Image (cartoon, rainbow, N blue to C red; front, top):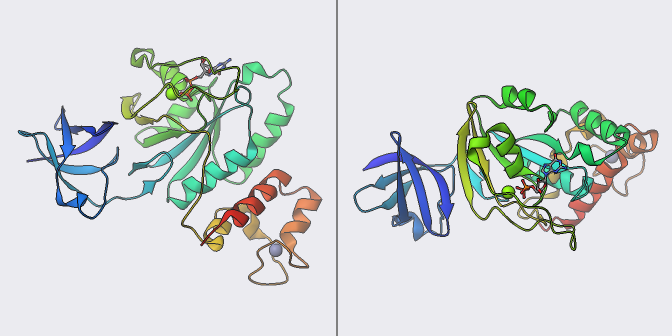
Length: 276
Ligand SMILES: Nc1nc2c(ncn2[C@@H]2O[C@H](COP(=O)(O)OP(=O)(O)O)[C@@H](O)[C@H]2O)c(=O)[nH]1
Ligand SMILES: [Mg+2]
Ligand SMILES: [Zn+2]
């Protein structure tokens, strides 16, 4: 028996890294009866002779989309074009990462496809101001020094440039990338599995990405707490949800231009979608 970390998952085959060696295993343990599926990032105990995962150790955190565990940062890869930057999706990714007790970081890509970067700059400054570190794929040294020693999962729309980003950081990874399909202006899902790559002192987890994101199982209060920039405003009602209430300091701040209108719109939408 050995203890290790799951670094790759292709359908039901899990690669487990233990003591500098990898073993391909299938799940066999009791955890299966309680409906727990092993995830990339999980620490586990394996039977290396027979290639079985016997036991999963408790998780520090679990991100649903992409479904990985025990990561320090969720690196949101957001392209300015092809596919176009969608602030509602970006905000949803941020909220979903924060709800999983993971720290969000943004890396913008495809700056070269936009002639005027002023609007982008103003968005980027806003996210930085509310405490989310922002980078771009033209200054990768800054990103790498920030992430050094951490476990990082790349998330973001298919075609945003996640695999390309890793290839730029380390060309020897030689990950498959593809031109985004023009017809749909949506990525083609080139990355089909989840895998951790160690390079430049960072454990990067590449994932297939997604085109839609649902936030389920959290309360309106939980979602509200992920909009930390709203907390500095004092509304008339202590439990103000910043929706239909009168004398709402958050809505006033949106009118004054202190809160990005798209942030507020994302908030309204996510609160509306809350089922719990
Ligand atoms: N012009 C431009 N294209 C990029 C950039 N980053 C990635 N791409 C292209 O975007 C496409 C999708 O990239 P890929 O890494 O497969 O995206 P993923 O689905 O997020 O892994 C590929 O054709 C890349 O060459 C960038 O910064 N600028
Ligand atoms: Mg990819
Ligand atoms: Zn309010």
